[in-house]
Image (cartoon, rainbow, N blue to C red; front, side, top):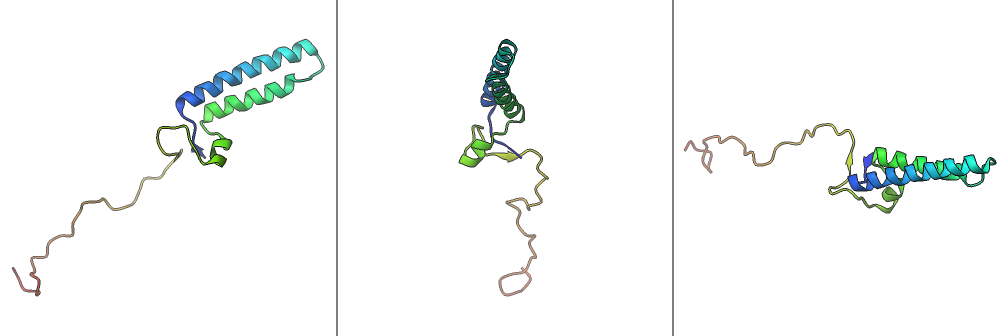
Length: 100
C-alpha cells in the first residue's frame, strides 16, 4: 500500500473524521433509533483510518497524490542497482591491444 496523502491532508482527515464521529454519536444518542447517526460514525471512522494510514483509495484511482514527493511503497527493499559513475578498471592496453 502506498502512502499518497501528505501530512497536512492526513491531519485534516483525522480532524474531520473525529468531528463526524462526534456528530454521529450525538445523533445516535439523541434519536435513539439510528437515523443518520450510524452513517456519520462510519464515514468518520473511515476518514480517521485514512488519516492514520496516509492512504486514500480515491486519490489512487485518480492517479494523484497530496505528498510532496512521488508515492512510495511503505516498506521498500534496498536497491541492488549498480552505482552510477563507476568506470571499468583500466587494463593498460592500447587501442591495438598493445601494452601502453
